Amino acid sequence: MPDAIAKVAWLRLDDGRILAARTHGTAAFYLPGGKPEPGESDEQALVREIGEELGVTLDPATITPVLTVHAPAHGKPPGSTVRLTCYAAGHTGIPAPGREIAELAWLTHGDCGRVSPATALVLDRLAAADRLLRL
Image (tube, rainbow, N blue to C red):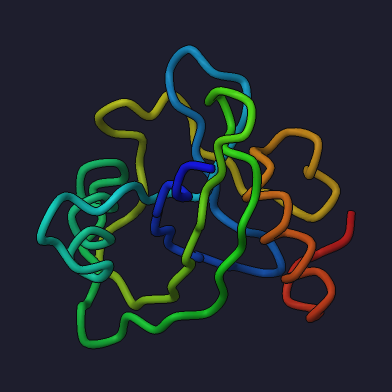
């Protein structure tokens, strides 16, 4: 069995909703972030990816791991999995679609049908911890 695809994501919660992104040509939303490049730490990848995708600057001193989930990799061959490590972080700037991002949305647990499998697991865990609205 192949190794899981390692990805990092930024958890940006506001009033019980979480910021999610959708790329051009896809219907599913996912948490902003991406894959670390060779030699890059999770924190470095997170800062780079969020800057590219959302035009936001994360404060590296505030990056804190929150949770990790394992799930089927969305849009990949059967049997492919993803290990998604989610981080909270302070930021400057207002998130806006950039690079390959078609749309941003503030989602609740009720949006699980609109997201990737890994994002759905994150929404489940945040809702179970009463950090995400269950609309």
